[in-house]
Amino acid sequence: MQFTATQIADLLNGQVEGDANITITKLSKIEEGVHGSISFLSNPHYIQYLYNTQASVVIINKDFTLTAPVAATLIRVENAGNAFTQLLEMYNEVKLNKKGISKLSFIAESATIGSDIYAGEFSFVGENAIIGNHVKIYPQVYIGDNAVIGDNTTIFAGVKIYSETNIGKNCIIHSGTVIGSDGFRFTPENDNKKVPQIGNVVIEDDVEIGANCAIDRATLGSTILRKGVKFDNLIHIAHNVEIGENTYFAAHGVVAGSTKIGKNCMFSGQVGIVGHLSIADNTIITAQSGISKSITKKGEVYMGSPAFDANKYRKAYIHFRNLDSLVQRVDKIEKLQKETELKEN
Image (cartoon, rainbow, N blue to C red):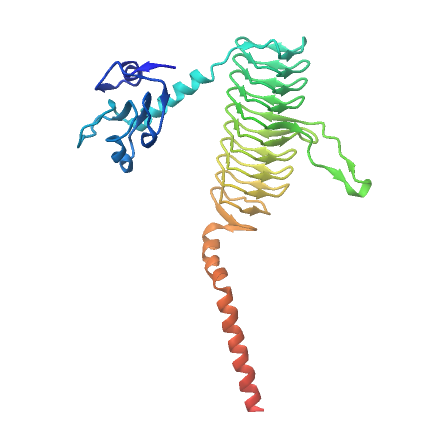
């Protein structure tokens, strides 16, 4: 892609200072700018880089006052951070605007395919699958029989979607993720036989799932990710779990079977939740916490393993850190007491 400073200013409703015809072909951080790139300045801590950056164009706020000459062409806007975010969105949209069905892809004759889709090399769409409009299926994606993929959903390379999975509109599934694999259920009392997993996975609209996640199908019924759920990389969701709307999971989160999580929750990295629990709306769990019982009050913050109220945990942690000195004090007291008893006897 190649644009002039004037074209970018028009897109951002900005004003050009410098060479209006200079062209850019890439985006960069201001401290790592190179010729032909465009960057931005919104954080005061980076002002120093404006005067020596090698970027060809820099977006700055309208009210920013220069204190020295600047080699780069400037584009002045109301809010440089927001303008650059807008530019990133446009750049990403153009970069990911793939179309056409590769001759090396396979789509079953019984599948229903929407308009204007992209299917990359060695992608596979199974029997009776339904693919919506403007769906992007990158190379080596597997979509099983009877799966449903909603409009405008993007499935990146190497994703595996098992049969009967239902994915909504405007979803993003990143590489390596597996959706619909069997839940982990066996019967130790019956020769450790596997319990058949005949349910499915339902993912509602506007969900984003990071790379290398695993979302198991239900034993019966559905494992459900409600509208607006966002997953980081390496999240595992077990059978029959339900994740409420707009809940966020950072990396390495694990939710065991049949747990129900409410709306607008936020879970930091490496949080583990045992099975058959209920987590109330707006719950926040800090990193590396282990949840072993249901949380029934909305808006609580938990930390630790096993986790409990974060404020109480922080107070208790002061005593955790002092345990060694407390033990030494107790030992000293016991020793003095014994010496006193011996003297008295």
